[in-house]
Length: 247
Image (tube, rainbow, N blue to C red):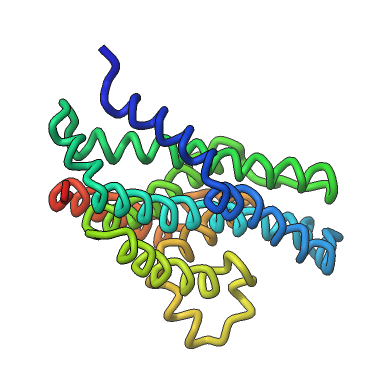
């Protein structure tokens, strides 16, 4: 018998690919952003460094893919299902909140990986993308970062009663992170006050962790980022499973 979360994952992945706006903003928009800024700044190494703008920014655009997937798409789709009674029908099936959430996560994570692969291909083909870190450490940093953003997105996804409220909540969460975390513009360009405010967002810590490891650092060099991201993972999952609303 097929497990509930596998069935949910498969159906959600297919539905996601059929949604033009979700497809564009997750897979195409981050790629266009990277190509736009790279066309202005190129990827020649910075003075005294081994990396250039694209090398530095690819992890940030990975964070943009994560935020779009796990905040915008997950929150709005789950809220729409709740409003339409889809989740209520799930409740009649042998499905638990955790299986529903894991199924949703698996589908959105697959889309996220696809978006990241597109960024990597474009960076390698057009800008001779450089990777200076340890592959396995970066994979760990990527998974932890994705998990923290997903856990944050699970909270409103579990509670938002209607599609409209889901969109509002997702926008409130998404756009401050987009502009303050370093996903759209380099974090070091922000005023000092904005830098301090940005530290409340897990996406800021995710991008800084991934950038550090990508450019040759080790994940244990970033204990604060690791602690914040891990905390968001556990807090988000606890709230989501504990307070998940079927209707």
